[in-house]
Image 1 (cartoon, rainbow, N blue to C red):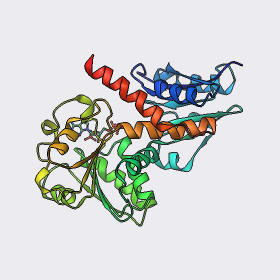
Image 2: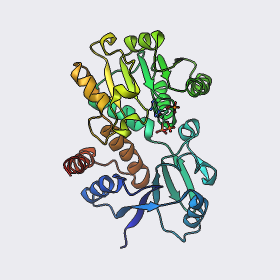
Image 3: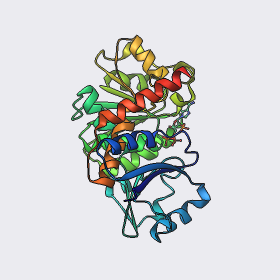
Image 4: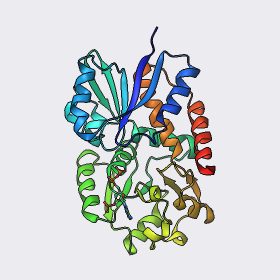
Length: 292
Ligand code: ATR
């Protein structure tokens, strides 16, 4: 029997490690699927969706990466409430000509936090650096799990304020505060936080953290604060390196990649994959990249 097809779509998509981890987990469970990359240009997104619905392109489901996560919404037949709230979809299930949209990013993040740090989210204070799409997905997941106080900080304050306005409407039990990534109030928020998560794209640029955040008050943080970064390549971002040097506990981005993938995998196949199989193949690949 021919394997069913899964994919990740994006522009660009060549860098994606998703095929590697999904195919490893599919092989281990002996499931009849194959996962590949498909390069989809922004202008081709509507026709790509149409072809799947018409059965001209055989795909059982797919992941979505930049820049399509938000743009795909109008072409879907149903969107899960959490994805609707996030305004973005990272997983699509194809069911009998209908495309169903989900978002596993936020849940994948909190699942990896739970697994790697055992942090109890209920009642704590979290500060996020950045207020883009990633911050939105994560703050929704954190608020859903009972985080009491979320400080949204951003270089462009208006973006953090808009996000806070949206979140306050849906999560009245959580207190949302906004700030620039500098100054006294920023320092205060950090000194009260049990978790500080970098959702900005700064770690992707491989620039020194200090170049972009010269006003980060490492000395004022509580010793048990967890420092988290969403970027998994490099596995240890400069933000995490600095945190480690301060003796703080770190939470790298690889866990989120694995767990958002595991949740997507379950949506397509009905089986929960072995996350260790996914993690170890990714670790090997990232190590290879580092030494290349
Ligand atoms: P994503 O969907 O990955 O969150 P995004 O929506 O483009 O991507 O958001 C990128 C985030 O990184 C934003 O919060 C952005 O800040 P601005 O809203 O001020 O642009 C932040 N960011 C990017 N480069 C930055 C830099 N050099 N210093 C501080 N923040 C930066």
